Amino acid sequence: MSKQRQRKRTRCKIDDLPEPIKNKICEMISDTKNTYTDIAIYLYEQGFEISRSSVGRYALRSNAALERLQEAQEQTRVLIEAVKNNPEVDYTEAGLQIMIGELTKKMATAQEEFDEMPLDKAGRLLVATSRTNAYKEKLRDDMRSKAELAFEKMEDEILKTIKADEELATQLHNILLQAKEKMMQDD
Image (cartoon, rainbow, N blue to C red; front, side, top):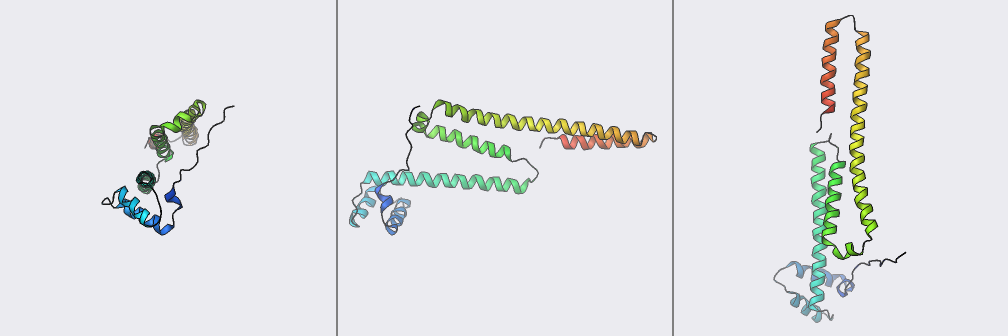
């Protein structure tokens, strides 16, 4: 068995600074008038020798984390809005689409991690996603089949009961067909 390197969370000197100074750096980074050199000079004046490139890497990492958080919040907001507007809809599809989108984005942006991921693990992820989709389709088909069978049996029983009144039997048959069509419609 090959030993896989465990990734540790990236840390830099800025992460170890006192909270007030880190807050000031974040404030300076968000103000586009400040350059990384300006921030490095500020840190030097505060007694911390941190290079301009370290500040730049910290800013890139902070901005990436903020973007991921904002994307997650937006996806959650859209999903909640959809649930409010359409409470009868199956949201497993939406959840699957979000998961597939995030996996695709992860693979597209994390080349190093993807290169290190064993091929069998990547294959298992792909197979698991495909199985989930196939299972969902099978479940939908099974429910349709069971509903059709239940309607047929119910119709037979009702028709046996009211066979004496032909007009009533025809009306009931039409009502059952309408109910069946409504139930079988895809949203």
